[in-house]
Each structure stands twice: as structure tokens, then as C-alpha cells.
Length: 283
Ligand SMILES: C[S@@+](CC[C@H](N)C(=O)[O-])C[C@H]1O[C@@H](n2cnc3c(N)ncnc32)[C@H](O)[C@@H]1O
Image (tube, rainbow, N blue to C red; front, side, top):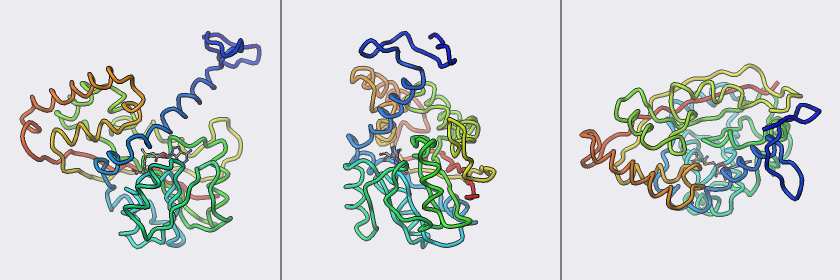
């Protein structure tokens, strides 16, 4: 790694004779991970958890109305919780395969192709923008202004993340065995707060569209077997972008670990989870 005259970090790598900056490398990695889900859309829908209803209530608690945009809606896990809560929901998702699953699962929900950086909705048309396990993929340098544009005055932006409760011994062991591609710092209660605290801010600085962030966490769980938990972990972006051999080895280690633990070796168990949230109000 080196530095240019303007202080920008540079990798040693070159693309077509041009030095690749660290910022460009991170951007490429983000795009690779954020676009990985479609290849596993059916498994994603089958195995990923929904969200704690208390977290949904908290996220929408200060919203001025019930018009809600689920941004980065994927196959509709959060969308379904929002519909159950009584919100008037529109879902926006950039990946065609994920969007197709959402439309299949929730045919009555208005579901549009789009992204956080280009939201296909009019100005001031929603009271809240919610995002389940997706806000970390947004380019907030662009998305911040887009989200602020579609929010009505006093509207709320909230990110929700389902995390694995690694304060439970066997979950901590699983996180160690699986490595950060399966269960990373944003996926556990000890570090999700610092990982997500400034998720609503543009990385390049500039306009602050939202007020002070609030964070909270809510107990949650998912009924799993050892096999279905491994299938859930196989849908994490870090696992989806791994070379095949490495991925199979990591999944095999987690399968063997779960078979060795009395809590998970046999039958159905509840995976201890939390739904964690960050909420801000549009300024
Ligand atoms: C981990 S999935 C979460 C899906 C769903 N919200 C859920 O709770 O299961 C992340 C989703 O964010 C979407 N995504 C990635 N980059 C995005 C962007 N820039 N704007 C909107 N959505 C994005 C992906 O296509 C994927 O469907």
C-alpha cells in the first residue's frame, strides 16, 4: 500500500497500467458482495430468518405515517413482517432473481426494480424507509440524498440487522469455526453497534440528511436443524463469493461442529438471535 500526492491510499495492483486506489478496491469488493445474493435467491428465501416484530414496531415508532419503503428488500423477509404489522409497503430491490422470489412470495405487494442510489419513487412519497440486512451495501454518498428525497418531512430511516447471539457458548464456537465470511463483526451483538453506528452517513463527508442515530436490540430466534443452519450460513455474501473448494471446506467445518455439540447435534433447536436496529429521522 502506498500514498499519492493527494494522500489517497494506493494498492500495488494496477488495472491497465493505472494504479488501483484502496477506495476503488473497497468499492469493487462491495459491489461483488452486494450483488452475490441472486445466485442463491431460492435458498435465501427458504433459509434466512424474518425479523423480530418488536424491532419493526421500534423502527416505525416515530414515523409520521404508514407508507413504508422496504429498500434492498431481497426476497421479502422484512417486507412480510411490515405487511403483517399493517404498513402500506412498497419494496425496491436491484437483483432480478431476488425480486422474482419476492413477487412470487408476496404477489399483493408493489415490488419495483431499483436501488438505494436510484429509488423509483416520487419525492416525499413515504413515511419510513426500512432496510433489512442491506443498508451496509448502500453507497451512502449517493443513497443518502435519494433516501432523503423520497421521505416525507419527519420521515424515518431505519436499518435492521439479524445477528447471532454469540454470548451463548455454542454460537460463539460456531462463529469461530465458521470464520468472518459466515459470521462477521456486524453479525454479533458485541460489535454490531460500532459496525453500524454511522451507516446512515456519507463516507465522503458532505451533507448530513439525518439527525442523531439511535440504536437498540430485540430478542429473536429461528427454528433450525444443523443442516438448515448450515444452509442459512451458506447464503451469507462472504460465503457466496468464496472459491468453491474453500466454501465447501468452511461449510464442512461448521457441519462437523454442529454435529459435535449437544445443543445442535439432534433435531430442531432455536438459534439464539437478536434483531438490532439503527434509526434516524430526516432533518
Ligand atoms: C442480505 S440481503 C437482505 C434482503 C432482505 N432485505 C432481507 O431482509 O432478507 C441484501 C439485499 O440488498 C440488496 N442490495 C445490494 N445492494 C443494494 C443497493 N445498492 N441498493 C438496494 N439494495 C441493494 C441485495 O440485492 C440483496 O437483496
